[in-house]
Image (cartoon, rainbow, N blue to C red):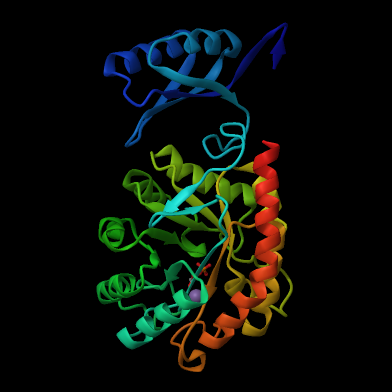
Amino acid sequence: MRVGFFVFGGSMIISMRPHATRQEIDHVCERIREFGYKVHSIEGEERVVIGAVGMGDVTACLESLEATPGVERAMRISAPYKFVSKEFKPGRSVIKVNGLEIGGDEFIVMAGPCSVESEEQIMRTAESVAAAGARVLRGGAFKPRTSPYDFQGLELEGLKLLRKAKQATGLGIVTEIMSDRDVGLVAEYADCMQVGARNMQNFALLKSLGSCGRTVLLKRGMSSTVKELLMSAEYITAHGNPNVILCERGIRTFETATRNTCDISAIPVLNEMTHLPVILDPSHAAGKRSLVPALARAGVAAGADGLLVEVHPCPEKAVSDGAQSLALEDFRELMRSLDPYIRLWKEARAAESVAV
Ligand code: PEP
Ligand code: MN
């Protein structure tokens, strides 16, 4: 509601300076309450961020806060997702995984098997995908399976094998986290914690990942809207962890020719709505290996920041998702075929940073 030059109601985000004192933080909270707002303060590892919701005079409150000691930035945010919105941060966020920058000027390919199955399997895959140009190794040690009788993952043994593969190749590790109980354990081994489609709205897990600090790869739920994906990302950031990468992996539609429908438009849509990086998983979208290269190229062209691809040394023997996994040679071929697309992608990114 607008009244004259003043805006009443809505929410604000107040970012405190990294070393703001307790006294400064308390004072800011007090000022916000005086303006008629409820305060929700989030203590991150680096800084305190204060959310304010209510029906006070936003314009006057923001003006006052900007002049209050300890405040770095105070702003009104109209989107329901706040920290992840473009309003909060225009442009792109660069998120680190094992020293690599996702969302920057490199297109990052993550590849590996659906499940970690054995030492031989993960080592062979890691060496092969690294040689082909992948920068991060994927592999599930904790597997979310539709049937309780299916392989559930090697768990700790799988995490140890991923570490071994990392030591041998230098690849970063992305692996799935399924329960808030395992956050500490998985964070010891993973450079990036994958939240699978089935857990996108596991709010207890999202909150634990928020207090953990390790980079999170958040996959879109198979029946979730883009807005719901952003609200889940907001859970992680609102609880103190800004290091989130989003992943489109296909959604459920009436179409049965593919396992899921690759929502390619989610990539430019997300790029308009959020500063977080967005990658595409063409494997789970397709469900069929012959379709993976075309979807992968579409992802690069649509402006994704990277890809997550399932690769297996012997797909027909894979314990999970063999039908959509590329053999090692198929993956090498895919990487070669992506080259000209990635060159154009880099030109587009370079032009973007000149324009900014
Ligand atoms: C996976 O990456 O192997 C996986 C289970 O993906 P999703 O959660 O997207 O189904
Ligand atoms: Mn899989």
